[in-house]
Every structure is written in structure tokens, then in C-alpha cells.
Amino acid sequence: MSFFRPELDRMAGYMPGEQPQDGGWVKLNTNENPYPPSPRVVEALTAAAQGKLNLYPDPHGTAFRKAASAALHLDPDWILPGNGSDEILTILTRSFTGPSDQIAYPYPSYILYETLADLQGVRHERLLLEPDWSWNFDRIGKTIEQSKLIFVPNPNSPSGNRWPFDDLLALVPKRGMLVLDEAYGDFADHPHQCELLNSTAGRQIVVTRTFSKSYSLAGVRFGFAVAHPDTIAGLRKMKDSYNCDSLSLAAATAAIQDQDWMRQNTARIRATRERLTTELKSLGFDVVPSQTNFVWATHPTGQHKAQYEALRSKKILVRYMSFGNITWASDQRLDGLRITIGTDAEIDSLLIALREIV
Image (cartoon, rainbow, N blue to C red; front, side):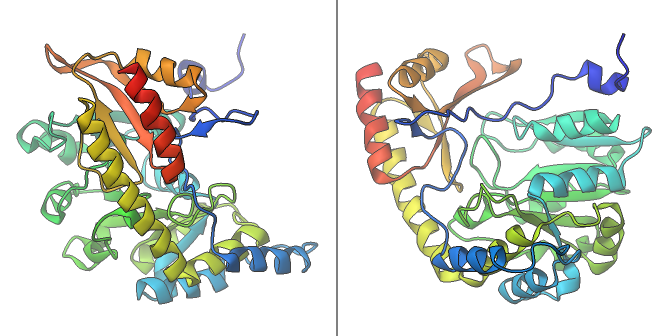
């Protein structure tokens, strides 16, 4: 006999990427930043640790919101801090959907959206993408219209592509909200600055950001939402009283104040991304042009799982991803390798191994 909610019993739960506990691995499977955070972060953490940890943190993250508003050129009332962007996505799901509502999201994409819908007991629908990762609006139009909340990672994962503004505006539901998950936005050749919030549909749009990727703070757990102040005020009712601790607030505030450090690291990753893409193509892989800190690679042999396992035997981790039994065509199965952009030395190790395997 189970005393859990039926929704919890039925679901498998989200499975994060492998995190090996022993050393010696080349870890290119969870889209972490290979470079350290700004030195200002270490200074801020040291000061915060020596401060008043016996007191509760600022429940509104005032210092962070002021720093973020300066970086984004928005008023602080447009910003809601969270315990990682995943908490922000949870808050959005709980705030905007109930048992009679529907959530939609692109597929293949970030499968956590489906998990959040299951946890909330909400119907969910996949917006199946085309083989070139574009939208078929004739096919998905009715689903968009019937949805209360639509999650769209832009750039997308695992493909790494980014969609134009016109496509995103076409995804805004008539009676609901569009969430633009910009976890990888800083790695784009031309990063967005929340421009769509100023569009005619701006009040129906929420942008989410994370510090796990471009700011090198995956171990801290911090993210935030950007939306119209009326939306932020409503979301604030749903969050935990003290959802961000003093250390994460201090780290995030220092990190976002050092934009030069972040941009230097993202530029290094973009350069390595270009080199990796070229080398993978020379090995016969098809690589989607990426705007993220990873690439999506498929091989004509279709032996992606075997390639993943061969790499793992050499202590090189990439992410093998398979999206069910769906196929675009008889020769196009939805599986492949998602490879995080590491340091140049890590990518060299990967390429040496792939040349042996392929």
C-alpha cells in the first residue's frame, strides 16, 4: 500500500546526468562551465560566511535584484530570485496551472517540464519539433491555444538551436503564459536582453535565467525570473519564505556584477565550440549549429549508445539521449550525443578517443 499521491506513484522522476564521485574523469555530460567563477564570488562568499549566518537571509534578495536590474537595465521589481532556475520553473507551474489546465513544451527538449506537470497533476502535451528543430505551427496550433502554460528553452536542449522572436511570439497562448527558459542564453552569439518583455504580449511572458552555466555557479544553486512587476508580485506569494540562502545571494550578487568575467568565459567556450563542431564534422558527425555551451551530434551509423559506452570506458562522460520510440522518418531516430564544451584540453581528450572509436 502506498500513501503517496497517485501522480507521484505513476511517474518515474527526473534523472539528472551522472555525477561520478571518483577522480580522473573528463566530464562533458551536464553542461557545467569548465572555468571558475569570478574572483569576486570567492570574496563575497568569504565575507558572507564570516557574517551573520545566525540570521535569516533577505527574503526578497534586495541586493541581488538591484545588481541584476543594473545588468539587465530593468527595475528591481521585475526580478524574482530563486533556488536555481528549477525552483523558478516549479513556482511558475504551481502559480499558473491547476488540475483542469494543460502545459505544453517542445519535444525533444528539457524533460523536466514534463516532470513538473506530473508533480502538479496537470495534463501535458509535447510540441513535436521538425527534423531541423523548427516549429510546425499548423500541427501544434490547437495545442498552443488550449495550453495555460508553455515552456520553451531558448536556446533549446539538447539541440542547441535558438528560435527567432517571431516564432516565440507565435507560441504565446491566448489565455496563458509563455516561459522562455534562457538557461543557455549567454552563450549565444548575440545574447538576448529580455527584449520580448517589451512586446505587445510582454505581460504574458516570463524569462528565466540560471547561474549554473555562464556564471560557473552550478554548485551554488541560484536562478531568477524576469517578468512584469504584477506577475512577479503574484509569483512571490508562491515561493518559500526564505527560498535563497545568504551564501547563494552573496555569490550571485557578486557574479552578476562582474559581467566582464562572465563574457570572457563565454567567449572562450564559443571558440572551443566552433573548433569541436569542425572536428566532429570531420569524423562524420552531423552537428546542429549551437548557441549554447554544448553541441548535439548524431552519426550516420546510429551507434550513439555504443559510442557513449566506449567513451565512458575511457572515463570520458558525454550525455547519451534517446527520446522514446518517436522517429521523424524511417532512418531518423531521436537519439544522439549531447557533448558539453569543456576546456580545450578536455575536448582534445574527447577527440582523440572519438577518432579511435569512430
